[in-house]
Length: 286
Image 1 (cartoon, rainbow, N blue to C red):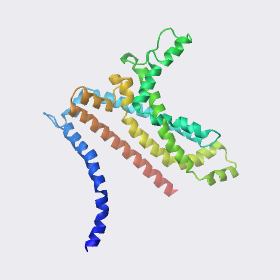
Image 2 (cartoon, rainbow, N blue to C red):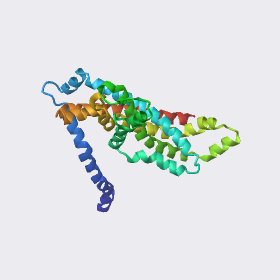
Image 3 (spheres, one colour):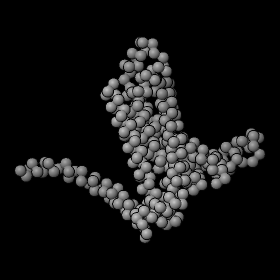
Image 4 (cartoon, rainbow, N blue to C red):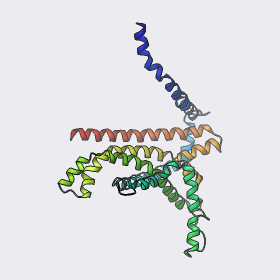
């Protein structure tokens, strides 16, 4: 009996350290975040009422959703084009694969500083345009007055920085496509566009949906690129949480923003999982 008990208990003992680490690193911060967010002298929802009444929450949510809605489709389209290009395995494709993957090694801080060195008042772009005689004075991209320009610089930076992640996922999915399907399509005289639309894209849907989920979750937490290039001129949810925690020294409001991000991400994850499940059901039905 004792040996049977030890055998049955050993798997749980092996995963116990992992569970303890997860509780300490995730469970305790989550509980503390809830405590801070709902701690208010007047009402448990006082912190949420404060950020909603001031309009700061809706402004940050608007820009966060807008940035996510623009960069994620752009990254998917660009990554798919690059993956199809590299999957042709032409001469020198390994070098191109290396070049495309370089941004994966960069942090959002590094990418932001590189963008500022290009688009800043004394950056490379202005220097080139002035030397070519196309402009007489620098073009300004940053500052409250130039919000629209800063917004598109952020989009360009984030697309360049994070597209390789989607590219790697889609390339792995392409390489797992059974080549017999493509050979059969060649026998029947399918064009490249027909093979892409009828064979490659349907088989690539699981990888595409996984890449969309990962990039959407990461994009919604965007912070470093926006904060370094625009600060609060373009408010985002993570940036507001950082602002209230470090500059206003109000962890309660910061926790409210953190819970808002968590809630929206849970909704997005649920929507993607439902979509994935419906796709699987559709495939089974077919």
